[in-house]
Image 1 (cartoon, rainbow, N blue to C red):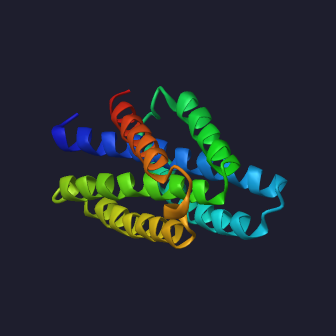
Image 2: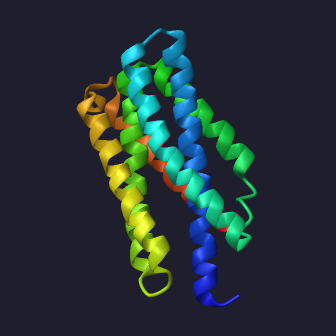
Length: 175
């Protein structure tokens, strides 16, 4: 496998893991909002979850086509992301939106690094990631508009989720 193929394999693996994580976070939040009969936030989180599904479907297809194995840590990430979704929603809708803001903030930067890396390697994948990055920025801005910055403990919660997201990326790229 040459250097370009290794870069692409790493990108597919980590992005597939990230999109599975996004689905699990939203599934956890949707469960809580449904149980609490919070229709407004359930609708918003469901909308963002559906947009993320396009990303997951793309990376799943790419992984199959290029025979890229998922991260060995996928079970841990799935469970952790679901717990993150449930726990932030249980802290209240503003905390759930802190989760979205914090994750998307890191993913925006992460995607930019990949966009730069993919120049001259695979233009089709690069264009998709540019589109997905725009979606992530929109989700981050939606979270801010929904009051994430007004959540109790905003700075601490945002930092913990930022750091958790960075760690997940680090490990998914390597294992």
